[in-house]
Image 1 (cartoon, rainbow, N blue to C red):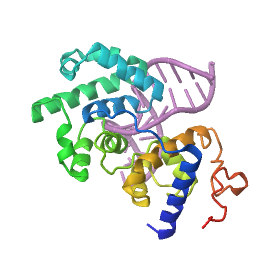
Image 2: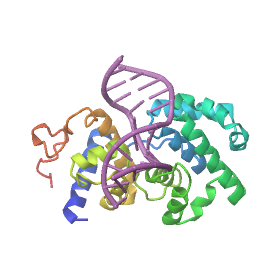
Image 3: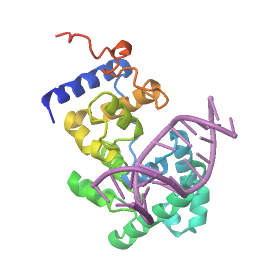
Length: 226
DNA sequence: GCCCAGGTGGGTA
DNA sequence: TACCCACATGGG
């Protein structure tokens, strides 16, 4: 990764902090809860994924109950989040695998693993791809992983931090190299904020994009103050 | 009614 | 490997 790209990433990170501030850490979930919440958030608006998660926990207060329930009932509980026929069996498969292979409905053992080992394990679970694995690693286990959702992917492409043809999957490792791990959380959250607020999908291009300096919202091209 | 929110996995060339 | 598509719902 070129040094100048790293410098640019740090500069964008600082500008995002100026504009959006330091994001607050929400209440940390245990890794299994974080995993289920993240699965429910796949291809789903935040509001509906949280509603689905709350509905699931209310109807089945323990993971044992989720596992024991007929899959149709689990799907019904999370229906509001959409894609319930896909997500319900995946969630139950994960719980079944944990029960059979680890003897407990918990992912707490991931805390003892290296980030690479934990990531590999998460990716082996049905319905868990690079984004979902990275969310569990970063938000719950506080391990260095950089989740790339559709906003992060779009904004970092428009900013030129990754190539125009770089896939979201590839972007996970590339972006993780660009900023130090202690900045992952704030950089990730602020890129999403920016993606929603300004550099949204409907916009033909990002309004802060340095490729469009005539509408440079973050003043990315201004002289460095130092 | 239409568009937007928004990842994973399976199939095909 | 690289693409294409199914999967479903809610809000503006």
